[in-house]
Image 1 (cartoon, rainbow, N blue to C red):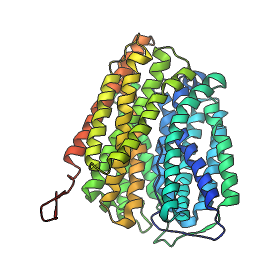
Image 2 (cartoon, rainbow, N blue to C red):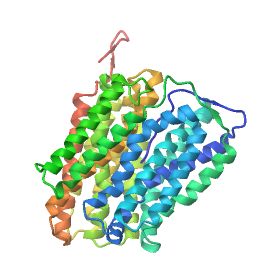
Image 3 (cartoon, helix red, strand yellow):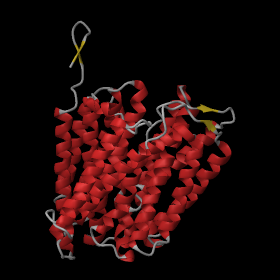
Image 4 (tube, rainbow, N blue to C red):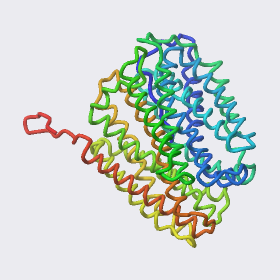
Length: 482
């Protein structure tokens, strides 16, 4: 479920602020953004058949949102810092609501993909602005702990409600309502923010936000995904694929050069990645994000296209997975006082990999209880164990004033990793399935995708073991050693 960066520099909120209303508005915003990451997944089969998506093209309903959200998240935070968090939050909510309406009215694949991309832009504007408002409204003390506890609970519950609501809405109201559901939430958040949140004073900055860098990074990642996805039509060695991937690499290289030389406020200080904690946590999250997205995608299709369940039933059967993530996140907090974050990542990643390998044993004539429930619980608890420790590692090894930037980079990496991983795994699954549209043929593709996902998670565990620094140990004289 979705996270955002905290503003790296404080802003001053006027005395007209209403803390309770601010908390309510931010909670609605986070619930909406978190719900939107999962509500679409259960409706994918109906979206595909209703608008005429190809098997691989259907993944762009996910890619379009993840790429713009992840690619523009850092820029959204910096723009909010510069021009005011309330102002940017109101803009993001308006864009998110309008694009949700347009998506529900879509009559062709391209229209829905464009609407999803616009939703991602809106989310990239509203999410960091909302969290920064929460941080400045509750700067310290018990009220801050309580406010962020409510925010975390809403963040987790949004994903769980999303899978259930997605199934029920798709079956009983039509897939369009997985888009329309955002309209009342966006309207409520707009009303709360407009009336109850005071205008904040933008903080001073070194330069204008690096818009060019954000465009290069997002375009490069999108072309990379596009090149991988199109390998079902153009082989890896074809000129079309090679040229697309080469242009993507050039754009990403240009992004790095811009970040190194820009006179504007860069999106990322590249020196952050010289820190092993930051580099290792981001590599882990890149792989982790791709594997997590594949579970939501393949298992949703398996429940409906192979087992023949309804959308409402699939949404209900997904609840153990989402609740498992919440349980794992809770355990991570509880055991975080006793075990190092690195060890939690290794444990959680291993459990998730075992769960994915178990998913790889799903049968075309299987059942939810035998083939899905067990691996759902194992994998989701493992995923939940990894979320907080990854953030702790990525932010714990940097200077305090860069913690927000490090957190934002990690969240962007997770979203982009989700898109890249899903592109690769869906292509692998489609290649295995071929032209077969029987339950057995589809099942072969889905299980292969999950097995490759298990391998990706194993790579993440290897990174945690060999790249992340070992936790310090206290010696007899009280000194810390690695």
